[in-house]
Image: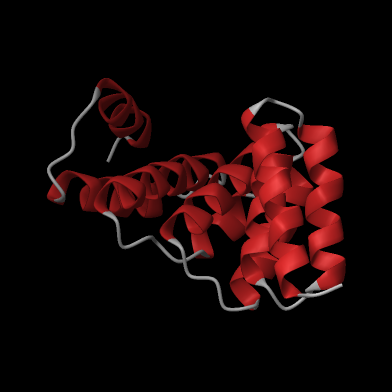
Length: 151
């Protein structure tokens, strides 16, 4: 097997995801990784597949592997944050890099503030909320979290 075959198999996995066939797509991504274990986008795509299938713990694992292998896509960090939050891994979520993209950064900061609240760290939650406000965002959810922080 060669590089082109690995990318073709990965693309087939992407096509299956678009039709909601997550279990089948999973096998394609695993096969692509088996052929080219150094390719970080395959880990990202496998993580997305697992996230869509609500397997948050394993999704986190593969997003982290993609990052370790050199992937630095903003959406990888966003999806990692979402999977960590959904798997109740709040302490780790607080430590991840924030994306450069303002919209994705906003979502990660919001998840970080909610995670800080879940770990009873109101000061840290306020810090993340302040960053969100500086970016110019405001919403009912932000206002509710502010009330919960109570600082």
